[in-house]
Image 1 (cartoon, rainbow, N blue to C red):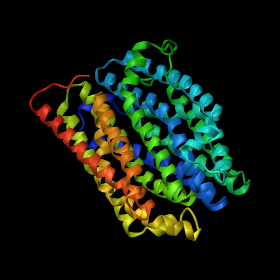
Image 2: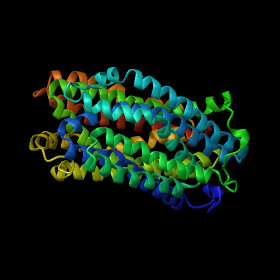
Image 3: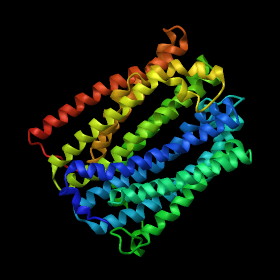
Image 4: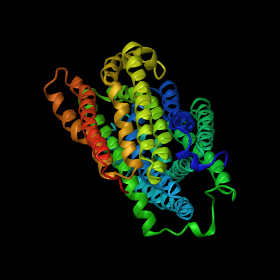
Length: 453
């Protein structure tokens, strides 16, 4: 290893956060280019309807990825805690079990998805005009679902074992490969949405080869061994207990997008769905940067939690929250000041451009409050407080947004504006709820109540 894992309780928290978060931010930003590049090539080479199809397929794609995240994030957080406890035998068991669980779960999701693909796409809001494009894309994504699970799972473990740069390199390799293959398959060969999907799957498979090479090195703290592959109830219980929070959060987001797509289809048609797809791609880049910060924070918080260094744990959380708020502040400025140039990256269709400007300003108007909530949810996940993570994950996505999205359009003119305004209102309500719960937790810690996992 380039540096010892024990530095997580000795080196200054600010320096650690920078060291761990920067590679993760680069990796997550690069990772966000998957959907961004796909959308740009599809929007410019195939057309607005294909761009709408990608927006419709995205929640289904994210549902598939959510199952992988449940194993990868849960395993990564559990690994950090065990490394903090110096339990290296269990740490290696986590490595083997994460791979086995991802393969098994990936196969189940792939088979179920292929069997009911058209029905799932109809549920997501696909129309007769966009069904072909969405089906072509998701069919290929499902064929490669196992590789997606393994790729993200191994990257999470790399960060947790103190190798964020290797995780970053794997992601960059995947993104560069994906960009080249998108150009080849979509622009040169004219394979449309199917070509974009094949580019994504092949790129992730290439990255897995690099990850496997690292884990084959017996000099690494975590490496492949004969006795780490047997699934156990103990491993499943702990990985899933921690991983259920990000899983539910991702699942809730997908469910919300499905409802949103159907409302947009009802009140605005396919171009409104395409507009949301563009806005989502732009904001997603910055949210991925915040997720990179979270991934940098997670091993620091998890390790120091396991080592009972609660002062360092809170310091890491505070610094991450500040940086996340600044990043999402940039989203606010871009969305309010220069929406049109951002939109024109994806399409030259003037009607679509005009239908996207106002919604982008509405959605980005509360950018400042989103980063804080994302960090808080990840913080509670990192220390194993799953119930709080689950509740906070569901506040914005389910408890607040769904009723607003279904009710507001009936009282706002034009109706489509009610759909758009439901997003920022739910963000504000969720941020208030998150603040209340966090303040109660801080008070509990200051009063000397121990945190136990």
